[in-house]
Length: 537
Image (cartoon, rainbow, N blue to C red; front, side, top):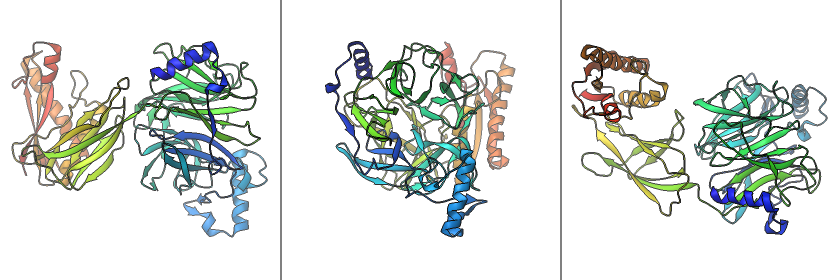
């Protein structure tokens, strides 16, 4: 990200002339005579999601009590019903529902490194007759955040949802839980950090002067802390909207009609000064041709291509999508080529699944490998957990992380190991963590134990022994008791996942079998462990 930061320091200081930028309006098959907003490029820059407003060719699915009214009603009755639905959302009169601002659908433009060549209109449930807009990608390449919360019976509420795609199939949106979430007005926008740990939200709340920017932090899968106002340097007495956070978490783009703007909304940039998320440099207005005398909004920078995407009304009353290259292209994903091997024989294992988790406690994605090899793209700066699975085998979880500030000039190779399930073998898991000096499992270890439960469900004749181990600090009898209680806590967890208790033996070994010499905190930590040994299969 250094190229981009240096560029904007120079940019703001010496006022680079407009001719140094090549402004590109996206082609007519993307920019229609209607409004196009919310450009969100994929990490590789080859797909662009955007929202089209008031377009006659919208997805008409309208569920009421799980029944699609578009399929049930005659056209004139359906139009009248949709008009009434939009009237309830707007709180006022709606002349033509097809041309309404509440008629919003997500579209996709696809292409290659030279540009976009085609558009597609994704089906339900990504789109329906209610307002739909995709606002952020996530570290999971198949998951995206959309505006509004949807219920399967057809109801809609304010907020955000996460939706997943596998090829051309979209899952039903799942609600995103933000503590103390509310908005006084319906206008809202959001962006997610590159690693999926931070949300920047634009909303009107009781501590806002108008629309203000807020920060939220991840607290679990689809769970976020309460919005925290980002301070009076970023937030003026005017509207701050449509934020975008750079890959290194330090540079924030947003749109505002604050006093420095020159014609409605302009795009601004600011740099974070510390870890509080409250202290920022004075926002700088981006110069022409990015900003104009008309409204500019919704900046979204794609590091892979170096393009800043944004919307503008400079060519008329409708909103169109533009882009300008503001930095050299820099790859944000690394290609990983992997092999799934038998841990004992080192032979390729065919017909196996590889699960990968791209966020803490996140939902897994799966690759099936017929020949034991696979290819995966992993974003820099985002830890990926990779785990192979196959019946009658136990898979070891590996963590892959490429530093964000490094350049990588080649593909990388990884070997994932599957161990045959046999008596006496250990089932390899990531370390299981407990609260200090207690037998309470820390929530971050739940996914790993759920994977163990999955192995036992797949192999119903598998029996295991859970052995708890400690370091040597404390009374021997207390350590023995603690190690046994921790093993029992895991047994209880597995039983809650429908594993029969008679398949699980627990033993507390205390400090009896160290794997390190207990000479330092780091060495003692290695001895505080839980092991899983196969006793019957």
